[in-house]
Length: 291
Ligand code: R5P
Image (cartoon, rainbow, N blue to C red):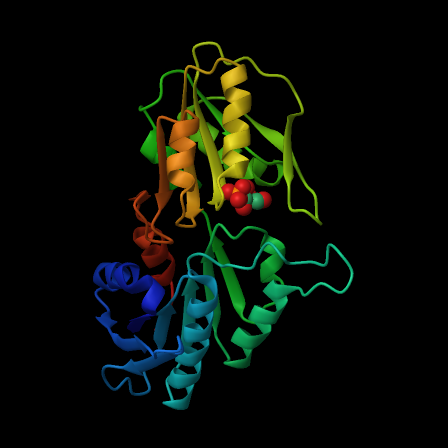
């Protein structure tokens, strides 16, 4: 089994290879002065099965590099190709909200399928509907246990809050490990302006409770900050924030300034707040495969 990490998952790919005791194939990468990408495998790969690991951040560059890599390994006559995409970008657009919109998740799935990929493994995809476009087998791993284990015994009188109704299951799983209750907020997005509004759908009491806000993605930080505002009005004792995919930005500082004690994320996208390692989760899934 060969592991080929793309440019966006160099560190993570190496960790996975170490855990699986698999051979790591490094790539040489550079950008031309005009921004175009160049990729070359540092060694021959033969006909072995390969696992490509490439998270989709920065979204567009990592995508084009992924397509280059897929084409390259196929052209070199490799065996089975398994693809690990820790952060599957563009999954928000898995359907048409306004007429004539592109369904970007579908476009990406179609291109990946073109290269006869055997299996696609993702982590906490924004919406599972984005995976239905693949012909390849897909696996959606969840980090709810990873997040819950990090906070187990760390919070006094905990409470879990999910800042939007679409991730109830995620909240339920975390709350179960923490042995507490949970709820979610209702989030509405204006499809034209992109502005969001967050509301409580059922009242809750937070006296003396340490609250964990958990979400799949933090991008601008707006969703989490809306939730923090609500929690402060409810007199939460302290607020902690965890997300799976943190899109590197200034959101981290804004969220701390808004009143969170801590903000953590996984290393699906490597950043200054990547405290949780997804390599063991991915390695466990890959070890089920027969290569
Ligand atoms: C959206 O529905 C996701 O679950 C996240 O809540 C969202 O992507 C976060 O984005 P932002 O940080 O820009 O509010």
